[in-house]
Image (cartoon, rainbow, N blue to C red; front, side, top):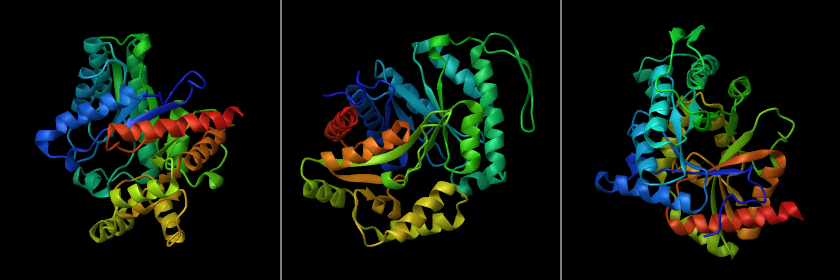
Length: 342
């Protein structure tokens, strides 16, 4: 299998996504995690995103399964401050490094489903959650550097002479990503020196971020084939109309304070009845939370190349339904690299 990330541009990082426990029968779920992790490693992915919310199994346990059944690929673990103290996050990272000599990435999440947060009595306003996330992540980063005890006094967290044992090797320090398209989310990523991850607009509408001091990335799904019609036939089969899903989506939009949710919903409403390479139908039917790129290898690669030209260097893919799907995506990235070198 050709690699998603290769020597022509090693700065581009591609992550796949692990299946959700709510979508797989319990007796098949562990094997599904292992399969996706091994497919992703074989395809040359940097890592595998693992979601977190109140309805899903613990992401750290999923990450451990990924580490135990692969040799290189890194779990990209979603971290929500409402679930654990920053010391616990740092302890988990250092423990995984100590036990397996493996690196992880952390996907720092300020929000989530509003009802999930309310059930935990977390009523913190949207922008304040990102201010909290900066404090939270700063403590994690300082603990994992391990050079001296950490004392920190902020609005949300206070620690005093806290030390991380076992210490984490410098080569295993986790990469930090921050999810969020709002100004508060982008400011948090900048404050932390993290990669800012967003759900993109169509490539021709995407703002140029190459002048930004920090790295940026996007979440997308890709369905591509040699023939345009074949790609759309597969897309329609994978994501048929689901009236129940549409109603769930509409309800989620009403209760969400997420900037990206509202942005994508607005674009979906404005593009209703039209079909281009940029496709929001799976999002509208509550089947996934990212836009899809659908079409021929060349057409989709052209969109990916434009995103790279805008300055995005990190790509997080949707959950792959089969090993072969990553092979088709490899061809897209290969075509995109060729376009950029011409």
